[in-house]
Image 1 (cartoon, rainbow, N blue to C red):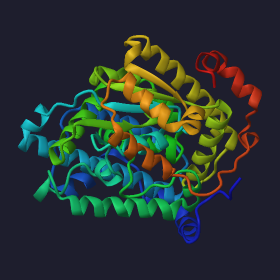
Image 2: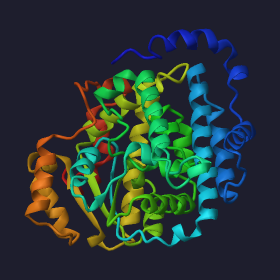
Image 3: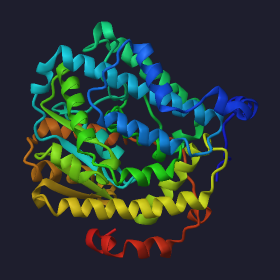
Image 4: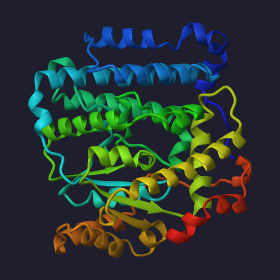
Amino acid sequence: MNSLGPPFPLSVFTRLADPVRRQLLPIDAKRAKALAERLNGLHDYGGTGVLKRLDETVDSVSAVDWNALGHFAVRYILNWHLGNRLRLVELLKQRPDIEDIDIDRPIIITGLFRTGTTFLHNVLGADETNRAARTWELAHPVGRRRDLIGDARWRRWRGSHEVAMDHMMVPEQEEVHKVFTDAYEEDFFLLENDMAIMKFFVGIGDYQYGMRMLDWDMVEPYQWHKRQLQVLSAQRSAERWLLKCPWHLWNLKALLTVYPDARVIQTHRSLVHTIGSQCSLNARIASKFRRSLDLHEVGSFWLEYSRLGIERGLQARAEFPDAQIHDVRLSDLVSRPLEIVEEIYRVFDLPFDDEVAARLSARIAEEPTAQFGEHNYDIADYGLTEAAIQNVFTDYRQRFAV
C-alpha cells in the first residue's frame, strides 16, 4: 500500500491549517451559492431541483471529517459546478434553439469501475464519426459570460489548471488512472453541474453520499446532461456521441429514460481485480482529503456498492430490448480487440469499412490507457478475500463468465 496522506508540500499546508480548517474554509450551501453568483454575476439556476440536491450534497459532505485540503477541495468543486450551472442556464435563455439539437442513438460505455471502459472508449474514439469529448470540454461545457457558446481557449485553460491540481494533490494516481486535459474523458462532469457529484464519493471519499444518491430520482440530472451535450454539439457537431462513465450503470434506468435510443456497451471483468483495483485507486485519492481513512471501510463500501451497481443495472436492462445493450468482457477485449470492436459495430449496425478498421487498428496498436506504471494492491488491506468477493457475485459471474 502506498503511503497515505497529502504529499509534500501540501502536507505542510494541511498540518498548519487543520486546526482552523472549519473557520478558514467553511462548507455551507448558502456561502457556496453566494460565491458562485458573485463570481459569475448570475443568479438563475434553472429550477429548484438542483438547489435541493445542493442542500443534500452539502448536508452529507459537511458530516465528513475532512482535513484542510479536503475542505478546500469540497469548496472548489461546489463553486466550479455551480458556476458552470449558472452560465449554462444563461446560455440556454439566450439560445433556446440549442435544445432543438437532436442527440440521436448515442453510444454509451459503462460497467463497474476498473473494467476496461477507458481502453474501449479510446479505441472507439479513433473513428471520427464517434464524437468523444475531451476533459476540458466536459469540465467546462460553457465559457465566460462574454462568450458562453465558445471561449474554448479559456475553458481549456481552466481545465488544464484542474488537471494540474489533480496531479499535484494525488501524484501516484497516474499509476492507476491519469487525467489529461486533451484526452477523452468520462461525462460524469455533466451530471455534477446538476449537483449529482460523483467526485465526492468515487474520489475524495464521502461513502454515505454515494449510498444516499441511490435514492435520488436521477432523471432530471440526465435531462441536464442531455442539454449539455446539445451545447457541445452546437460548438462542434456530432454524427453520433460516444460517451463513457462507469457510474451510468447505477443510474441506467434514468439514463435510458432520457436517451431511449442509446446503444449501451457494458464491460465485465474478474470481480476480484475489479473491486481490488477500485479500492486501491479510491484509497490513494481519499487519503489525501480525509483526516483519517479506514481501509476496511473502503473495501466494505466498494463491495456493497458494486453489488448494488450490478443489481440496479440488470433491473434496468430487463426493461429495454436486449439488442440495445451489448456485453464485452475485458479478457476478450485484451486478447482480440479488433474482433470485439468489429462485433460492436455489427451488433449496433454501424458502418464498418477498411478505413474505419485501419483507424481502430492503429489506435489499438498505441495501447491507449490512462494507467502509467505498475498498479500494485492487496485486497487484504481492505478487509476483503477472494472468496468473499466471489460469493457476493455468484449469479453475475455465471451469467457473464467472469
